[in-house]
Image (cartoon, rainbow, N blue to C red; front, side):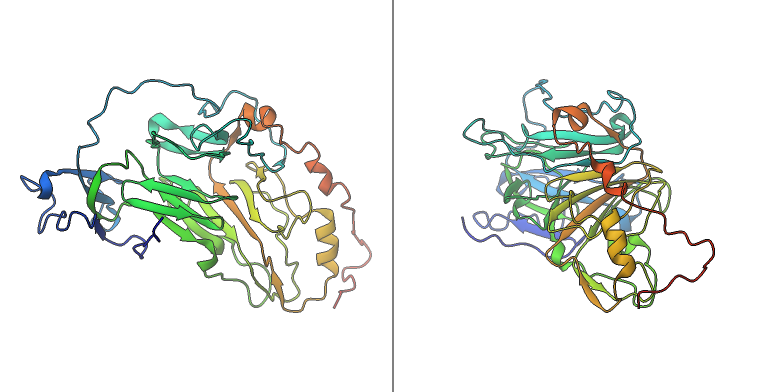
Length: 370
């Protein structure tokens, strides 16, 4: 396959046309009476028409046939995809999953769509308000079929193996430590397009990390890469957050993530390496969920080491990339997540059992390690 070329610039107005059909983009207007090469003009809107111009998202596509040209949709087996958030009772416990196992192709071929498994989610698809977190476990390419998600934009975080994604706007090769966001329908008949509502990918190593240079932790929002806004300002349906390699220099500070209870739900995953707050048990390809107001934080081993460490400048998380979806919604876990996946770590809670009291009622100033 020839090397792919990408248009740079997040949120920019971009344009592209198939080099085999030069001049396929109309000049000076979006919807001419007759398009070049007798193509069909079709608009894709990612925002309401009445949105302010600065937030209006739309693209024009010039197709061999419009996307409305299809046979009636038919229901198929949902497999492990669901939006039933009431199929199991709420579980307020800290939850952690061991790495999800990719089926062997020699036993059963599974493509991206067949390999989608809903792990947790919340909200109502009819009101277009909510999110779902799926695990994809695939071992073969999609053949003679395509997939689109009409519930919202699709954020994909690959952990193992490369994804060559055919979209309406072109191809993307997405590798581990990269992410992509797509709005897809049939990708097979677009000749040209222009606009600002397009699929995109991003290499997480390019994220410019900010950190505290004096004492204490800065607000974790400094690690936010993408946000899906809710109707309440400052409160997200989902924030996509990463914890990349960085320097730790905070003085007189417990540097790992602190113990925490949160009005938000936190789902974490690990692409590679070792997460600083839990060196064991939280593995690449697995995940964890701390629901609304469920306490969480460093395991006992991390606490003891960090409390006694000499606080010199140090590199943190080299060779590691952890990520988090933080949501204002209370995420419900599916039957597959709790039982059928057979990956739930029943012993997760034990990582905090060795924590012991260090309370010194007669001494306000315990000896400092440095």
